[in-house]
Image (cartoon, rainbow, N blue to C red; front, side, top):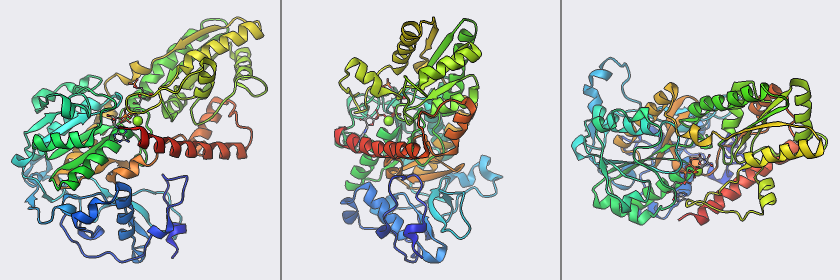
Amino acid sequence: MDLSIALPFPSITTKPFPSHLLLSRPLFPSSSPGRSLLSTRNPSSSRHNHRTPRQRLRRRVSAAVDDDDGGFVLEDVPHLSDFLPNLPLYPNPLEKSQAYAIVKQTFVGQEDAVAQQVVVHKGSPRGVHFRRAGPREKVYFKPDEVRACVVTCGGLCPGINTVIREIVCGLNYMYGVDDILGIVGGYRGFYSKNTVKLTPKVVNDIHKRGGTTLLTSRGGHDTVKIVDSIQDRGINQVYIIGGDGTQKGAALIHEEVEKRGMKVAVAGIPKTIDNDIAVIDKSFGFDTAVEEAQRAINAAHVEVECVENGVGVVKLMGRYSGFIAMHATLASRDVDCCLIPESPFYLEGQGGLFQFIESRMKENGHVVIVIAEGAGQEFVAQSIHDVNQKDASGNRLLLDVGLWLSHKIKDHFTQVREMDVNMKYIDPTYMIRAIPSNASDNIYCTLLAQSAVHGAMAGYTGFTVGPVNGKHAYIPIARVTETQNTVRLTDRMWARLLSSTNQPSFLNSCDDILLQQERVDRDMVDMIHKMKITST
Ligand SMILES: Nc1ncnc2c1ncn2[C@@H]1O[C@H](COP(=O)(O)OP(=O)(O)OP(=O)(O)O)[C@@H](O)[C@H]1O
Ligand SMILES: O=P(O)(O)OC[C@H]1O[C@](O)(CO)[C@@H](O)[C@@H]1O
Ligand SMILES: [Mg+2]
């Protein structure tokens, strides 16, 4: 069977999965209880050390392809026993937990995997799977041996405090761990600040607050200094909450830990309000953000429907992807036009934004526009002759497209069309990001935190946790950082938005849309490549 053609590899949309990596070979018997039949490697650490996370990921893929198993592929995560053979195993304390006593299947089987594709064609290979998250029968740490730490990096997002709280409570209540440190102020806090002790009591109320009680920062990732600090402090479980940049940093920490042969489990919990993390269903805080964005859109709508020729512009977050804008627009029904970074727009002439605004104003007396902060950056840059500035992590600093657009609309209608417009510009971006998470995000954060704790206790390392088709899984970090999620112009969701607002797509033909989609994919690859070079 030619797996190179048939295997789906959906999140890498710009390149097919290299066929030479898809070897057909049987699965070997289990080499460690952490692995069982699904995967079989136990490479010597010296061989292992020379490989990048991506190379290792590929190796795991090739090792796990089995022709007899209908093209089942396991993209496995590293395990401490890969580079530290003969580690002792202990029964999982949950065995004796009252809470779990009634649960039929307390422990996740070693054969359990989560499929990346759930919509399949009859006869197609089973495709890519990830290890299912959850408690294992045996653990690799005795509770009193664990010294865990938690760090939060990158921008804020609703729910970070809930994740911190549930890591601490999960470790303590489920596994009896009571030595947990908070690293203050992001990655640089490992080597430049004192730690704080985290107990269930200390974190009891923090989920009710926005932000992160551990503080955060951008930049300052110094792998050697961070791992020195982990070593000096005797930390053996590292929980890292952050976005794509943070997860790249986590992969480097895991590599360095492995190189030094330290028994340290590194667990990543993906965070980003932009929902741009690949593979996982959605990131925590996203639902809260969409809900809060409704308030801003509603305010804009109320303002503009109460005046003549009202034009409301609401700017929402979304550096490279317009998920918040798209979902907030779909949820609201008060939005006339949604502009996102993935889909270019133009202002003047036939089919342009000005013409659309004018027709909606004539029809309804008012217009509401939602714009994601990353949209139209090239226009703003042109108009103010910007020199592409970067933040401390190497992310491009965005210009205020909302303000720019508001001025452009106002100038056009007053000067060119000689019409008075009542412009109301609302920028709720930081207000949205700084609130605590809503009920459903709180539950989601709890699952993420508990899955991370179960994974680290079971000896998995260098993994990111997250839901794939509704089931929590351990995903190799490289898999979530090699690309970013963007709104796909060729998917149904964007079509739903266009038909719900009945706005112009600004792209005139199917060919234009396909070309634009290719451009977005190419730009994403370039951007990720550049970020690798520029980050510290
Ligand atoms: N390529 C990289 N390698 C190592 N560390 C990185 C890399 N990119 C970013 N980091 C580190 O990760 C931390 C957070 O990165 P960044 O500011 O880009 O936020 P993020 O994690 O992507 O979250 P978000 O973009 O959602 O706010 C920073 O301390 C930064 O130094
Ligand atoms: O102003 P800050 O804190 O650097 O963060 C802004 C960026 O962070 C994000 O919220 C991602 O965390 C982006 O949407 C936004 O562009
Ligand atoms: Mg980021």
